[in-house]
Image (cartoon, rainbow, N blue to C red; front, side, top):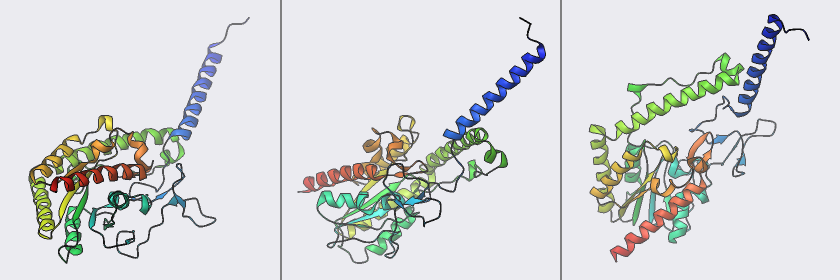
Length: 314
């Protein structure tokens, strides 16, 4: 049997390397994230893995799924479905509004079912604390309308300053378009940098002058609700990150301490949801808003807290 030549060995090695690269590329084409326009601020999705959404694209167009929104009532996309005069006002942004969730499955609708009343959901996508306070002033023009006013707070409601740790937005590149392997590692790098920057921005917004200013707004909102004859309840939505390595626990502690200081009942969603896998609570893999499961669990916890408060008041 003739001895294998150096040239043959080299050829075999090159072939093995090329074959390995092709296999790796094929594997990443199966598992790597694609570059598309869908993201956490959109309410349209490229597929329907849980069978929860409706097909919202027209015939002949690429399939796009979502929950049709009614914008006729200026409620951020949700009509006021009220069988009777609501005794509860629900404030917040897209989390409380229920982006990607059917109206009947949202926190405020489920809460009304638990309590046997209706909740007026005036949450609007993109609202922060300033806009929530303004919305309450508009809705409570006549005192005595609501027994309870619920503010479903999200951790970015205090405002985020990312200017000190800016991360450029994702930019599509020819290499990322051609190679799933390149796209995979570029995506991982972007997500890591964005996570680090975002975590820092969140933590900074709950300290110093920013926190003192926003705390004063929470206090003023509580005083306004009480002067109108109602009680305020604070609901804290957690960010649906990996709960085992959740970096925002100190913010939840700060907010619950503030609520205790202001004598505001509080439901911390981190305690409610953290026993679940965070990804099981997402609307979609490209949209990490809370899905109908998260809304139901939060509604149960809020109802329990309100019932205890009512019992203690008697």
